[in-house]
Structure formats: structure tokens, C-alpha cells
Length: 142
Image (cartoon, rainbow, N blue to C red; front, side, top):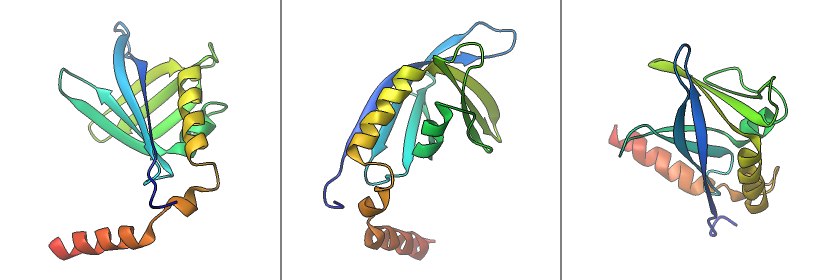
């Protein structure tokens, strides 16, 4: 399976929620590749040509569709007042952001990733030789 790569992409509209400010719509590209089968990337378009990329566990996103998930920089949970929407909270040394989006959009994206690489089958997609070669190559350059 390692020789075959699968990539899933979806575009979603998120809403940036800020205290005492109007909601700001943000276009987000969600992507998943079988080359990194445990992770999902969310690219937030912050300007005309600028994006901010966050990578987090696919399982974290899936768990956050049904209950509060995450204890670190990324937290995901259904909105208490509207369970058809999901809250995504991102924290970094440079700031904090709270977004909401449609649960259905995330659910459909996740289903496509699980169709490509089923849960508990991620291990069979990992190429440890390539990962080790990349690690050793990076270490040699430092």
C-alpha cells in the first residue's frame, strides 16, 4: 500500500469568532494524504495569498465531532447551543483563535479519509524506511 498514495481535499467555510467583533468567514482547505495517515492538515486562508497551516491528528477531529476532544494546542467539540456546528480552538505562542464550522462538512471529509485509509489500518500505509531516510538526511544537514 505504501507505493500507492491517496490524497483527499475539501474546502470548508469556517467562521472566526472574536469577542466584541463581527464573525469573520475564513476559507479553509482540509487535506489528508495516505503518506501521513494519522494526520489532517487545515490551511486557513488569512489573506489573498497567505495561509496558516495547522496539522493535527485525524482521530482528534473525528472525536471532536461527538464530544470535546483535545487538551493541547487544538481542541474540537460540538457547539453546546447548536450541535450541527463544531468549534475548533487553536492556540499557539503567537495567539488564540476560535472557529466554528458545519459538522456535516467535517464529517463528510473525514468519511472520505476513512474510505481511503480505514481506521486502525494507518500503520500499513507508513513507509518507515523513507521516514528514517528523511530523518537521517535532515540530521546530516544540521
